[in-house]
Structure formats: structure tokens, C-alpha cells
Length: 367
Image (cartoon, rainbow, N blue to C red; front, side):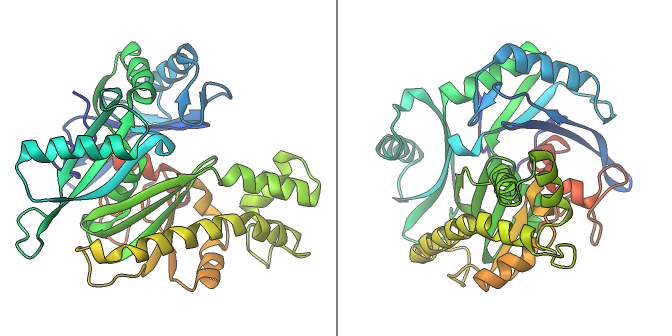
């Protein structure tokens, strides 16, 4: 009933809007087709109060219902014209992996996947929703199946489903944030080199490796914007409001940081994130012989997305430390014609925080 990948990872369902819900905020977007291409029909955003969602788990359904009910009625711009919704699942509770299995029948494959899920996740198969697709089907050169599998616990997903039903929405599909992000920023849903997407939000940073025509690996850590702002607050002995201002208005820009204290605080905060990036790159490159999507086996590029990627000087900092070309994502890559990367009501910099919502919204414009 509720699918992650549908019949194809990048199929898009008709007449749906995308809804991205996180620990601290929500964002939704509806796109529409026009003679000129694709337009922004409606969007909205707002805060989620502390305690309503914690670590991706809904703790107060009633409060979330009230927040979203009002938001859906009164978008920031435009008007929603559908009750069908594609919504995101918290990355920290989603399992998205490539499994390699011998070639076998569809039913045998499904049973083998169930066994693999139970071996790799501390949950019974009846306690999860899962979906899968073969990504190297028809490749005679490969003697096995590469299968993209997405799994989430019912105890995590069901409260979100319940909330949406209570406000009169029809859930078309649910999916991991990592899938939505790559649908949004990977041009043509294909790349001839392995790339690492680092999606940095307020409380979670996700690491997503994409190669060929599919996501290869994803994971997340609770090292993100809030912790970095807290680091500035402690280092400079300023309150959280001032620390947040310095975080976004100064960042790694040494011209704006005259005494170097903000940069120094950020470098300390970023060191842990850099360490995590190195770890995931090392893991992938140690297993890249299983990647049939690209001739290159090492990460060739890093793409930054999420609201924290707005930080001044962040691409130059990561590139200089890791010696890997680093660039900001274009969340409109599969929506607007090049070189466009924004619309009048949603600037490029703001769009970086809507990457997941835009990827979800792409499901809602056409088959």
C-alpha cells in the first residue's frame, strides 16, 4: 500500500505535492506543468515545536496535526490543488542499501531480500515496510543482481501516515530523504562518476553516494547546523541568536571574520563532520568493485545540499581539506532549464533548504 520506490525509483505520481517533515521544521511544494515548462504552484514552510518530533520520531501526533492542518490551508505562496501527498521519512530511521544476490526468480528474490533485511536490521520483517528494485536488470555482463532496497520501521512510519490522514491528505508514497535529494539534484538522474552528496540540515547530516543511475549508499549522523551554532556560541561566549547570525552571515568568509574567531570555532565544529565524510568515502571506495554504474571507483566530486550548505565559504573549506572538488547543489536541476537555478518566489539560496521537498514534488507533476 505504501511504497518507497514505486515501479521505478524516479517515477512520478500524478497530481501530488511533496511534504518534507523534520525535527525542527516542515516544507511543502507543489509543481505544475505549463507551456513554458514547470512552474512553482505553491509552497509553504514553518517551524515544528520542540518535543513534537524527536530524532525523527513523532512524539505528539495531535500537535503535528494542528501545525500541518493550518499550514496546508494557508501556503506561503499559491494554493494547493490536490490532497495527494508524497512525504519524506526521517533519514536516521531509513535503511537504503544495495544488496547483491544471485540471479533468481522474482519470488525467490523477494524471499531472499526478506532474509537479508532480518539479518541486517534488528527488527522482524512483519514490523517494517520495505520496497526494492533491480538496478542492473538485463546486464548480461554481470552474473548477479544488484538490488536497491529501502526499509523503515512501521513504528516510525505509521504516526506520519496517521497525521496526514487526520488532516485529510491521501498518502501516495513515502520515501527516504536520500532518494528525494538525489531525484532533485542529480541532473538527468544519472552521473558517469561516483559523487558524494552531503545534505546538511539543522539536526542531521546525510551522506549519499550516487553512481551511474542509482543511489548506492546512504547514512546519517547527528552532526549538523545546531551543533555548529552551539560551538560558535561557546567559543565566542555569545547567545544562540547571535551565534546563528554569525554562522550564516560570516561563516568561513575570512574577509567578514576580521579577528578569525568565527572561522576558528567553525573549523573545530566541522572537524568531526570532515572525519565522518572521510570515513564514508573510505567505506565506499573499499567496496567500489561492486559498483557497475561507473568506470571510476573513487569519489570524484562532493555536492552540498540542505539549509546549512548556505554557509559562506563552505565549499572552499571542504574542498581544501579533502582535496576533492566540492560544489553547491542545484535543487532545480531536473525542473528548470539550464542555467536557471531559482524562481521569483524561491531564491537559489533558500532553495538549498528545499532540496528534499523539491525531490518529493517531482513525483507530483506527471507520469
